[in-house]
Length: 374
Image (cartoon, rainbow, N blue to C red; front, side, top):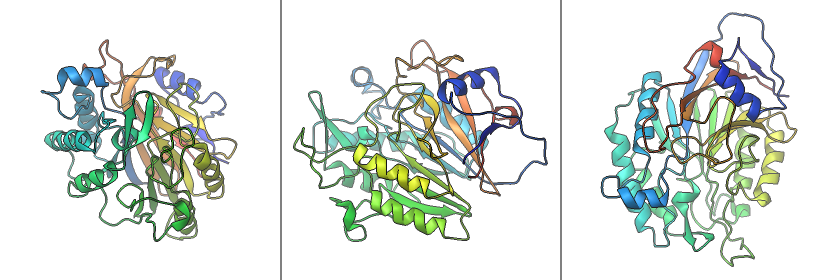
């Protein structure tokens, strides 16, 4: 099983947050040993778009619909850390327009220009992940798929270098059991960095399955059969010591906050079974719920790590003892395949569209959570 422990001692704010998020976890102080070798570092945050009413007021000066002050601070702090990879975990823009993708094209074009305008470490590669706001539309109270957005996303992020050059992904031809509507290789894909295998999932994958309530294709789906084959190959590869899976929607309900609809149960249940059979998988990292949270995935000894506090209006019911925060996760993969995470957290300002540069938890051994190999 996974053992989540604290490397030495946690800062008060982080202890409070983790106690709320992972009440069932057992924490212990490990023996002081020689500092293990770090094989790879990466960062992750999602949910940086602002609310629709706020974007309407600011769209002329902010065509991207991103929370610019929080995005700037995240990217500034991450540039100082200089990880190998930075994953943008979906809901980068407001989207959700009932159109043929024109809104997504306009907002994502502005978002790409905005991100390029901020300083970055030359060592860090950016990877963009789709969210429900990028791929779906709203009609009244209904959240429905928008078939036009898959291709628009692909044509924008690939030339911008926001997808790794060498990846594998699902198509209707190579994964017919998933009933895919279109080529998903720019939305769901996997790739290797040394001994680490990364899997990025589009948690709003277009499939032929109809939702009986709407008559349209289901939302909240993932290419589950492709995922099983991909993880099986990584599990049997002697080169791979650690597998990290990422997607926008949460797989299980976070312990500390209530959010929007997670991955559809039709895919969630078999996905949990697949993860159970793959001991190299270290964590499922997601956003969607506007909070920082660490929650056990059933009883399989695996954790869901949620960093959905990238800049969107935080969940009303999220009230960790240490206070509400914006921020991101800084992850360390060690040579033995273990995974550590340092939450970089900033106090929520009175107005979520304002800056909040002060860090509650900085990168230090005292703040790091170690997720040991199963």
